[in-house]
Length: 352
Image 1 (cartoon, rainbow, N blue to C red):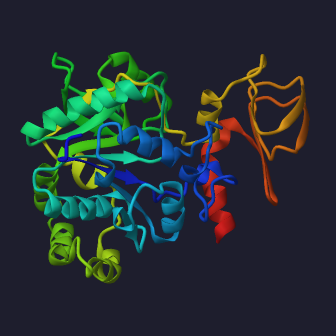
Image 2 (tube, helix red, strand yellow):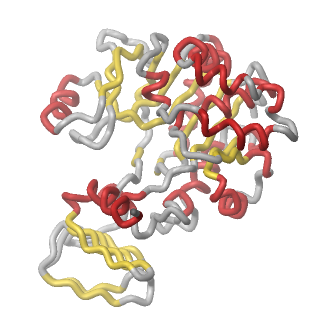
């Protein structure tokens, strides 16, 4: 294992599109969403530890999930769990973690990865990640692993790369926001667009320079805590200062503005497991394309549904097509799959 390799595992999201299974108290990354015997964060940690020393994997999460993280990942120490006292999107927490790593090891190369994605071919993932680490070890580059699009998805951002670039690792022309259907279709037809899967690779020096140049205010804020990082004073400094950082994503703060961004088109299968529909894709289906999690079902004239309940629940359905049916504790959700992006908004209204 290369002692210069590090990982930041992002585990602070709420996953509200997976409500009512994923909640603020217990988000989807801590659930075994596919019935594999392991939660999503456990699978992601295991995958990264094939290339990265276990002690070099840091978990970024909200302070209320600290105990869940330590319970599900008993091989890590408390100091590997970086707790956000306030939700400030991905840029501040990545800067914080990067400076901690830089102080510990100025030669470090790191990957930033979401904790809730599903990757089946882990061998290819490790191969791709090694390619990125090799590239970033010798170049001042910000890299991302781009996902080969399989259909015109309007729920993802896209990465446009130079079509004339014949190298395996391509120069990024620009990041594109979530498109409408027609635009997404034209992206796929043009052949030089990839999904932005939110997996980033860089050296600590490259990302430090980028923050210094593109986000000087945020950079200066966190540099004030430099002397406290990796010491007993870190927790107090973070609690007192973290909320002063701007609420902004790493994409908007750095990646979309930088001119040294590269992408490697990934060769592994990938699913962001962002919605019930994306989970439906990954689960085993019956002859009518229905996917069932735990429930005992009796289905008639019903197709392309996803049904999730407790194991002892008997579910009888007639005449439903393309629906999400979830029974969890005191909540029953029956919702069209075509409107699944709206679930997040409903959760927001219920929380008011």
